[in-house]
Amino acid sequence: MEELLAQSRIQPLEEGTIIQGKITEIRQNEVVVDIGAKSEGTIPHSEFPDVGELQVGAQIDVFLEKREDKDGNPLISFDKAEQKKNWENILAKCEEGSIVSGRVKAKVKGGLMISIGVDSFLPSSQIDIQPPKNLDQYVGQTYDFKVLKINLERKNIVVSRRELIEEQRAAKRRQLLEEVKPGDRRRGVVKNTTDYGAFIDLDGLDGLLHITDMSWGRISHPNEMVKTGEEIEVMIIEVDRDKERVSLGLKQLSSNPWDKIDEKYPVGAKVTGKVVNLVQYGAFVELEEGVEGLVHVTEMSWTKRVNKPSEILKIGQEVDAVVLGIQKAEQKISLGLRQLEENPWDMARHNYPVGARVRGKVRNLTSYGAFVELEEGIDGMVHVSDMSWTRKINHPSEMVKKGDEVDAIVLDVDPQNQRISLGMKQVSDDPWLDIEKYFKMGDVVNGRITKITSYGFFVQLSHDIDGLVHISQISEERVEKIKDQYKVNDEVQARVVKIDRDDRRIGLSIKAASYDAEQLAAEAAAYETMRGDSDLASLGDIMDELNK
Image 1 (cartoon, rainbow, N blue to C red):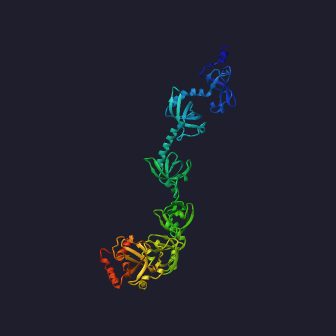
Image 2: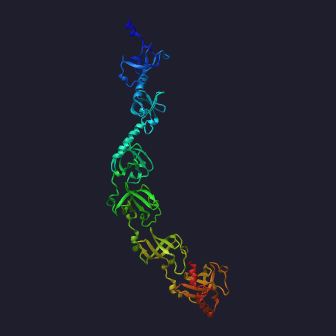
Image 3: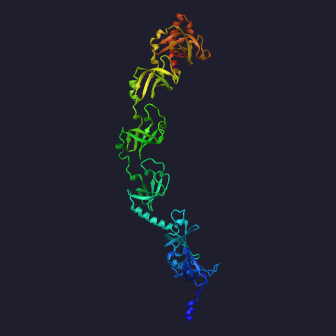
């Protein structure tokens, strides 16, 4: 009887202690346990590492939180019983800095709850090197952790997975730094990109892939070649073990296209490429990846003056060109577009022989002459000195204006410098060759004032010849200011007192218009002596003054 009473004696049910219970039922979401109380308690499946290993009738230890809840059932926990049993065991085996294995139980505020026999806390910042955005992916996973802090009073343990990873990476980095050498090929993951390159994770060792080492060709940003998170193969270019730096290359995995450039693109060869950049002085044409040639603006057209390449080309356009030159060391190729067509200047001497009479439209005026279009792209230039036999032309606008049709004679052809010299005055005979036919000493002539200077004024006579009335030949009285008595376009009558064929000069005198023969001879003699007179100037002096 005493033995039966001892066997039937109910174990003490003291709250906050570990007691033994028997599994009586395994339901869909919970396990029913008999602890010898008036009713049975239940434990959720989540508290067991593996519910499949449980059996009905098996004995398990549970933690009694309350004898009765509001429904009169005992409140028990398998997990807390395990933690209570394991806490002293954990403390004996575990200390700050030690490595433990644990399972992620749940996501909590600020991090994850980790079971290492007892609950411990893993802050978000200590989960990985880069704090993850999604913590749910870790729940249920088992990892190794480093113990950061143990609080005995609060029974709190803080762990870190990040420190463990960093230590492992540091060990790998040291090992890789000893192993790698220039020329090695390695696979890595693109960690991030910047304007100047990309950082590649070589399984613990970060290397810089500079933008200049990504492609033999032209790229604007590293994102054109690599993307964050992408796994790529790279070549080790340089290793600095003291600074733990590794320089990487991507283009070095393929041969340099410039190595045999002169064989592939010989001078004179016709090539096809794509316009990739336009600059003020020309256009860059990509012949293949890493190989670009420059078409200078001067090589775009034989006849058209190209001020900027955008007048002819646009980015992305496919063009044909001719290789003009190669500078292999500088990695430069000179290309030409106009060489694809026949140079019209090669036929210039044949089409416009010296002495031929031509007709064209004035296309442009400069301070020194007029450009006359002979055909599309071929201009001839008439210098101001070749516009008139008789007049002193200071600006071509005095004779022609833009758009005028003019006749001229070909004076010279220079195909190499693409120049044709024309003369308008050569279309007619030089009146000075037979000046005596038109003017003689003593002739009384009429004309129109065309120009007034401080020394006198010019009078346009017949046959488009100008004569000069010196200030001393205006009146018997001293003339201070010519413009007080005359103005441009006034009609005047004068007498020829000097004809100089060599210098193409005619001297006129208004005051001598009414002189008799004796007076005229005296005035002519006086005109000859003007050069030595400090108060007078010769016709040549006045012409020189006008040319200043």
